[in-house]
Each structure stands twice: as structure tokens, then as C-alpha cells.
Length: 253
Image: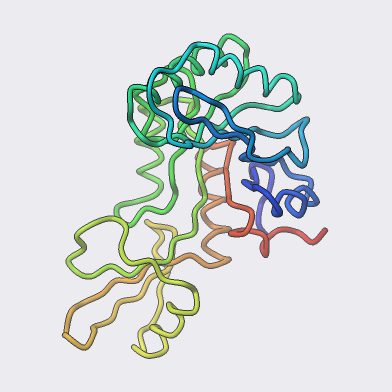
């Protein structure tokens, strides 16, 4: 059974009401920040107290005044939310300015701030959120390395993987596959799927019509459950997951 004690359901729009019925903390992407630090309201949170507020990048650029970070802290406090997830991945002068301001303000307020792992060098106190969809090495060792670099500051984004890598793989992304495409490929190739303990995912290999090797890596209900268990065993207390990716695995409401 899927452990839900550390899960935070990421939702927006119509998904918010359905996600709220499960009684778990929500991360609601309700705000966006754009040119000059202008804040736009994308939606009204379906639930407020006890949940997390998310702000996305709407073309953040230019000069960002200090009151932008103050306004985001105000939104979290006004709505009695647990903290803020700054979903800002681009590295610009504006993003660095905003994240530095948020980092200091939220630290002083005693509220958690979450930023993507790619922004780890821009913050001193914030939690850094790493993806679990790795395509090489060991998930356990990967997490241990991050915890040594940022002790007590690692959170995770549980993103199911389903990708086809041409061998030798040229990048870590591969060609994305839908579940239907992957199943059709498995049936057509006659390959056998295996579980990788290192990656905590399933995989199979096949040769295409050009005699080129392929490696397909994917998650299913069992590997998602295993990843959650692996993250909890590593002491990671915040596990973010898009609600549609995990809805079918949650206890019935």
C-alpha cells in the first residue's frame, strides 16, 4: 500500500477540489510572477490553511523590487499556509534577486521555502527539490550525495518516468512514451521487463528495425510505491507529486 504520510499533492484548477478530498497537504499553483516581479493570480486556492502556495514563472525578468518577495510572504501568511514553492527554474538576474529575497524572508519568518534543485546555489536556507526520475546510477546514492551537500534541506518531486533511450544514450531525457505507446512497444518487441533496484524503476531493452539498441525506463504503481518507501527511508519528509500522476494509487475517498 502506498504510504501517504509525506506526500504533498500538486494541483491547479479543476484538480484542486478532487485532490483536496484525500485529506493530504496540497501544493496549489495559484500565483505567477512575471516581468519586473509583477504578481498575477492564476486561481483561488481550493483549500488554504495547512497547505502550500505555489508561484510559477510567467516570464520573470527585469528589475525585481524587494516588495515582490514581501508580497509573496504576505500571501502565505494571509492564507495561513504552510510555506511557498517557488517553481522558478530559469537562471536570470531577476530570478536570483527574487529567490535571494524569498530565502532570507522565509527563513526569518520560520516558514519553509522550496526551490528546484537547479536553484540550490541561489539560496542558503530553502529546501531544494530534486527529481526522482533519474536514468542512470543509483537513486539511493544520488539522494545520499545530495543530503551531504544540503543536509536537512532535501525534498523530492515524484515524477513517473516513461522514456525510450537510444543506445548509447545521448542525454538523460530520452523520448517520452505514453503508457499505451510503451505497452505496444513491449508487445511488438517481445521484450521482457525487469525491475532495477538501483533506479527503482522497470526497464526493458529491444532492437529496432535499423538494428539499433534501445533502453526503455518506466514507472508503474509498484515502482512508485517503492520510490516513496525509498524516499521515506532516506529521511525525506516532503514528497511532491502531481495529483493526476498518483490519483489512482491514493486510498478511496
